[in-house]
Amino acid sequence: MNAKNKGLLALIVVSMLGGLLSGIYFRMHTQIPTAESPKQSPVNKAQFLQGGDFELEDKDGVVRMADFAGKPLILYFGYTYCPDVCPTGLAVLREVIAASDDKLQVAFITLDPQRDTAPRMAEYAGFFSPQIRGLTGSQSAIEDVLKRYGVYSRKVISQGREDDYTMDHSAGFFLLDKRGRLVTVLPHFSTKDDILHELDVIN
Image (cartoon, rainbow, N blue to C red; front, side, top):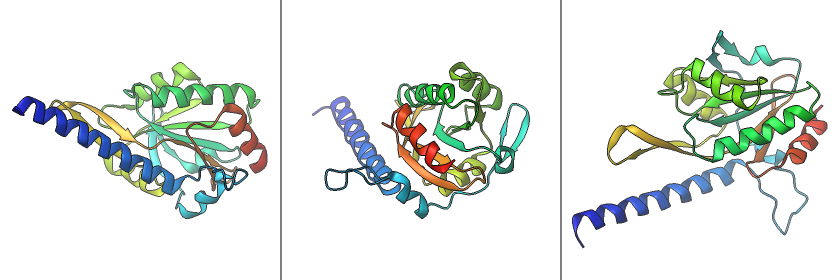
């Protein structure tokens, strides 16, 4: 096997391991109903996560949890260069916002503060809905909020170029009540109706 083929094989193995670890981590922090428990709610896993306050920023300045008080909040983690997962989730959230009659807030928090500036986050989130607030921050601030909410994220560099990379990450919808308490973590395959149902429960 020549060096090129060895490199390709190594890349495939690393990608497979990354996907496996991502899936394991995601399942640890979100409960997916099974055939044995089809009616179990993914609410249960939220109690094992710290949740809580954060200090990030949007295009207008510093943003804290207190800024969202008074209405339920959905946190969605991703990044603007995401090829498929994040646009899909944000499209679902656009539908949820349209059906929620202004009773909901949504924050899209980047996993990639190196590239996702506050203006870029605002523009990208606004493409889906002007009611989605794009948040970024320092690397340490982002790492802190990811830890609090049990979000897995890992940089995957392409062809050895530091500036050419994707972010391998878990995905889900984090629902918080009017007081900023994490109540529910819904898996990424949840539909608009799934999310609206959980919002009715916590309202």
